[in-house]
Every structure is written in C-alpha cells, then in structure tokens.
Image (cartoon, rainbow over all chains, first blue to last red; front, top):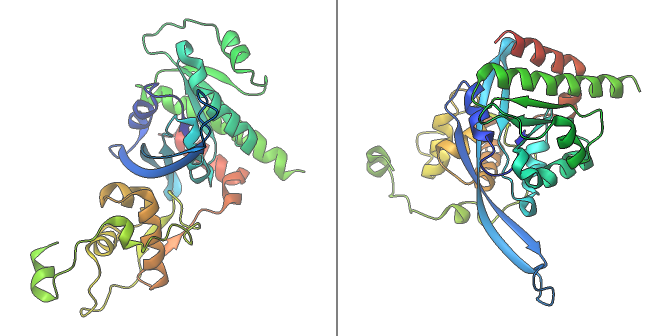
Length: 178
Length: 119
C-alpha cells in the first residue's frame, strides 16, 4: 500500500516500478460525519467517487506484487480495509511542507498493526526538514524507519520497498516465534 | 455491445452498473482488489451474459486481479467485486483470494525481498 496526501508522488512511485502502465480504479465511498464548522447540524452523509491508481510488479517465482496508491482523504478511510487486506505493508509518502496530510494514514496503520515506513519524497533533491524533525512531528516510534527517496527512480522506489519489507519481515518473524 | 451479440440473441438492455448488482453491495467480501480471477468454464452458446459479465470473462483468459478488471472494463470496484462473485457462483470463473495469514508469512516475505533485489 502506498499512502499519502494528494500530489505527494504516490502515482509517480507506482509508475516508476510497475511492469504495467499504472491503472486507475474507482470506488464509491459513503462517509458520515458531523460537520465540524457547524456542530448543531445533523450528521451529514456524503458520497464521493475516489480514484485509486495501482500497478503491479511480477517477480521471480510467479509472485505478483501489487502496489496500490491510496486516496488521501481521511474520512473515506474505510476503503483502507480493502487495501490493507493481504497487504505486506505500507509506504507512507510525505511532503515535509504538508506533514498533516499523512496523519490519518499513520493513525490507521498503527491501529491496524500493519508494518509501515515513512518515505520523504525529495521532489527537488533537497530536504527542507531533518528526518529527526519529521519523526518528531509525526510522533512515530523509533522502530519505524524514516527514509528519503526519489519517487521517479525505479531503483530508489525498489530500495524503499526493500526497507519496508525488512520491517515487515522482522515483524512477521517475531510474530511467528511467539 | 458487439455486432455479434446483437445478431445472435435478443438485444441486451443497457442498464446502469448499480442495477447490474441488483443493489447488492455485500456478499462478496472474500473478493479483494488483489484477488486473482481466471476463466474456468465458458458459458454455453445459448447463454447470453450481460456485456459487463462477458467483458470480465474475456479479460480473465489469463489470471487477472479484480483491480485490473475494475480499471479495464471499466466498473466501479464495488460493482466489479459483486459481478466477479456472481461469475464464481455460476462456475464460470475461479477466484483465488489472498489469505490474510499469507502476508505475515516470513518465507513469502523473503521471496518477495529476493525477487525485488533481483529486479
């Protein structure tokens, strides 16, 4: 699962490593929520169509690894249950200028206990905030890797997925020995 | 709708995707985005499937994910999963769902790591 706010480079990352041209699927989502700016109103029910981009890498042994870029809207988060089902882990892509856009994703993966890492997409090759600052701002545990990557580079995306899979392997090995 | 469909049977009625599922949204929970679908039996010549069902069967000559089916037919994901479930219940397709435990199998994760390293 590749999560993150709008325009953060999720689709670019999927396209960089996918064997197939990234495809788009649409899902209709219904969300119920109290209107924050007018709490006196009754709960509002909204329906929206969310587009999700995905790709696939076929690796040795006939394994197909699907990469799903998740919509950033937090209130439509229930789609994440479909995404998280059978997922090896999640890559949370962040833009350091808009860190708040990934809070909902991180909350979800923590609650769901899905292995995840945070990857700062270096759009222009410069890091505007230190990775320590990012970790602090996101309030994630020291065990969660925070890395930088270039979503346009196949090798960089692959290496970032390998960091995530190492984390997933550690978790799976620990769980299996319990 | 292809010309063949029109000439060999009654003209199919064009209906909206949500009507196609008869309003059903549940019952297909085992069909996920990554679930692989492949044709098992082709329908008999006198069976006329809706164009959407026929499109799904045409795509699934090779194993294909529900996400790809949804993108290529195209159908909303929620509709695609219900129709795939129907095709499975009718015996036209075989579905291979991902077992939640598989994603936490250290051996499988290691195979994916090795595969990615060799890309």
